[in-house]
Length: 428
Ligand code: PMP
Image 1 (cartoon, rainbow, N blue to C red):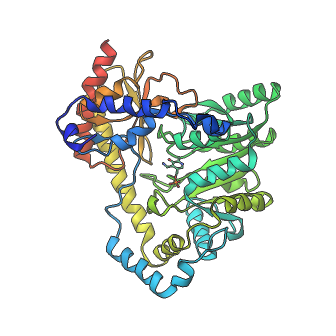
Image 2 (cartoon, rainbow, N blue to C red; image 1 turned 90 degrees about the horizontal axis):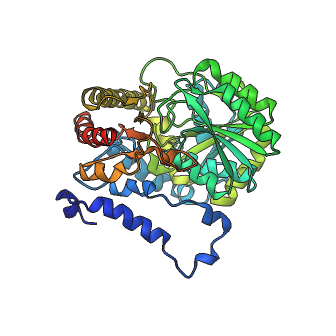
């Protein structure tokens, strides 16, 4: 697909989605060589929308990309050059599998800002983004057929990981206050009565991707208690926690529960995702297993990138940068909510997040948002249909809008383009 065809507003984008699907499902001679687990990774055209959404002329409310333009790029370039010139023998060499001690100590300070005050550097494993930590956790705990509990909806990248390990993913419903403890408890009881091995609950308590919903403070301990009673680990994924628009952070579940929670953090949203630096804070009794499993994948997290992150935390006003991001994302979220209020037809509802990158829109029952994607692309706007965020991948009357990477005016234009597509679907 060329840029010209898109700029001309042709119907090609919808065809392009079909072409991606056809290429992925076509028979080929190596098919029978696939492992069962690779075959289990589902192809979904929705996940390829990210590529299409980068085309000029389209307003992309699809990708949850951080807005990096406000980073001090010139100075960071000088810092990177200095690290290579002065410490190149370390920066370009293999490093320790757990990550550098300096960065692990700095990560303790970052987590303290959210209420985890007892973290020790030796219990941290630095990973290639928190995506890699999700993979390691699944590898450490899950055999094929084991159960992982997730919020419904949940992060598509985590679903991809779980599918690759042939795990049975069981979604538990949320309400406006996040995961519902009673439903979690009932689901655990039912699954354990069936003899299922439930290994962990994967949860994104702050500004959930895709829904933007935050787990209420008064539910957090209750959820850990329910999991502890059933001998299930909590995998708490918190890449957005510091990006709260107003007020103070709610303490992570890990804060009061060091033995029951594996906590995942990341520099992707508070600094830069291209460095691929995230971390896991692991209970002391699981640390060795987790670290060895991580080392078996990557040998070591990239030393140069870790040193650049360390220098950034040491030499720059990283907290000021987070404040800049918070203000910026808050303005963009407000622009999106105002545009939805102004343009959207009656019959729709949406979440009002307190932080993060995403708003989750609900259409009337019976409307499937997946077939609307091609029409939206033709109208010049991209979103992610709700089906992508549920293990069932069935029809969904939801869609995700990301406001992080798009300036306020463009957000409003995107919603203006989307509104008639949704209005038509509701009337049909
Ligand atoms: N968890 C969640 C909830 C996310 O939204 C993302 C990225 N979009 C990740 C993990 C992966 O982050 P990283 O870049 O640290 O791998």
